[in-house]
Length: 448
Image (tube, rainbow, N blue to C red; front, side, top):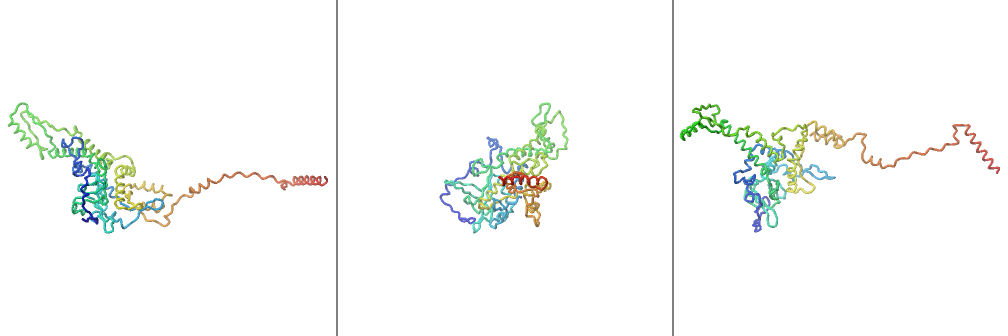
């Protein structure tokens, strides 16, 4: 059978393939126990239910949208190991992953699948040149990793018409990009953050459901009617029916109950102030944020930090929640597309770590001497100007090479003073006296 340009054959060796634990039919069920014995107590943590909790939904969509909005660049290694952006028609799939998804939609699906299920499976579709022309994010519930006795990894794909899989098929690992998260149970099985934060999310949903039922019931809490003496079963049933019909449910909040014969109504539910409803709901949201490593203020929980620096807050959020996800996608794309050692993929972080205008101009001012004016203008999305491709320095600055040569020169010694000239004509009398002495010495030498 031929699929996606590959010849897929079924042989006897496939009988030795075994499913990896953590998938449907494996060792670990779809419904996880949030604590030992939770299943026996009917405490379930389901992925779909957890997603409806506002904090979990906000964390997932925030992370996915922040990663998806960044442009993916194809970069090439240049001299001195400097990576610069380049273009290559063979990797047009980075701009348009498949016919029915934009780049942003594709990477949102990638990240949400990883956060929701712990695994992202991307199917590669090749053309006649064996170049990847399409990428499809598969439904993780329709994919099962398989391991042969020899250690080779395969993936069983169930039918998925949207991705072009018409029937169940087993494909080799080279045709799947598998990005997994928190491989706690098995190296090929990622674990979703729901495994740790699901119970808090279910508790938050229970609080919201309880509040919804309370307000739908006209803000009346269940209670008991007490009589001062004994009453028959018929009288109790009649009073109960009359109370439920007239004073419970929607539209009964403004009705006045008139009780006679010493009857008293006592509410049985715990008051919201006693249960600390708001504090409990905020706590569950903060637990979910901690599991995703998202600062609570990012999703509207808690107070905004007083630090007046947008960039430092974004850097903290990037390093805690986004960096490992971004770099994992880059590595998966590099290996899955086979870009080689001199090409690579890289997310453009400028869209995420964007500074406020005042800080940005201050940084560019301090970048003089390190960036050319045109490089600084490019950061501001401004066109280049003539003469802007040179790094400028102030005149009093000197290069390290010049300073090194200067320091290597020997220190000059002071010159010795010149001997006095006895024939200096500054003093005529002194010169005549010296000549007289020379004449005397000469005569004595001739008479000797």
